[in-house]
Image 1 (cartoon, rainbow, N blue to C red):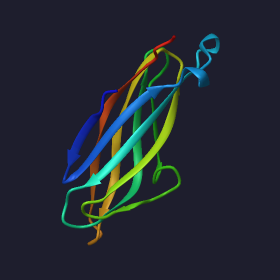
Image 2 (cartoon, rainbow, N blue to C red):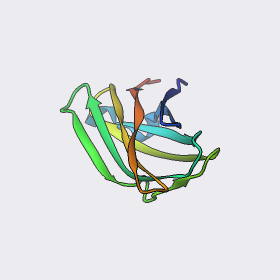
Image 3 (tube, rainbow, N blue to C red):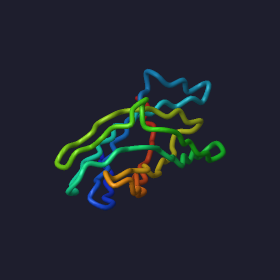
Image 4 (tube, one colour):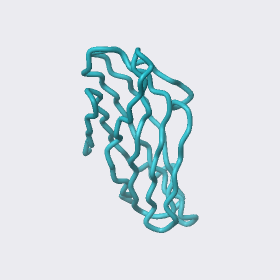
Length: 127
């Protein structure tokens, strides 16, 4: 499976996505995708993930945005040399789409930066 990677200020975000046919309902046009994310800190100091902001493109529906605090109920601190992993999901109305976005990250001194989440593609493959 393809891995999509983007590095911003020493923070590398890698995403892999998968179509879950058994969780999807083609007749109702609900296509279920899961994505796995790794956030690796190559910088000299810890950073904390404060917020997420997603741009979601669905080929058969209106594009939309999702934003909020942390990820999967957490605001992880990622220390230098460490990697934080999580997974989540997205349901589209079409066979394909894409997602991309940013994480608002905070340094120890309180300053912040936006770490880019690479655009990754969601494509249903039916058996």
